[in-house]
Image (cartoon, rainbow over all chains, first blue to last red):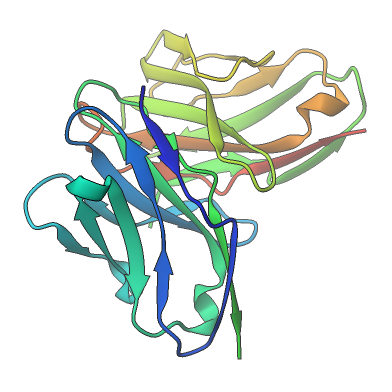
Length: 113
Length: 114
């Protein structure tokens, strides 16, 4: 069965620092991978997605993620965090034979000035 | 910007009341979903629909029910609300086939049952 693990429940960084949010998945075939962001009181917004091809994908708001099949990982990165990036971040996995997404537990990002 | 709307945004209601959470999308998507989200927890799929007159139970058992009479509308109903139903409910929709399509989410309904 598919599953997604986000090991970090809560991360705090200083504004301007680099960021990496971890995501590990479990799936037998090539997964479809997503990162979503949820601001307080809001729904989820897609940051980026990986289906195939280049394993480094670029998203909105300066985020990128790298698919590493050998590590079953899809970590989200940003070189310089802004205070407005404070939010909850969810990794999700889908597959070609299902219309359902499996979400991780989320990582709450706090940004200090 | 996603064209999927949920009402109400916030609802506080007494135990035993019947409630309906509304979800509408104007994108013509066939597939719609309801997720339940508790603080610090992942999103759990409770209902989904592949189109009009199609509804399925999700991975997490829920006492709620859904209907899909029109493509754009996917309401969720609780016949008798209980404090254990307190949670955030997120509606989403997708187009196309398979899991490689973006899901668009509404802003959610935060339900509190007292």
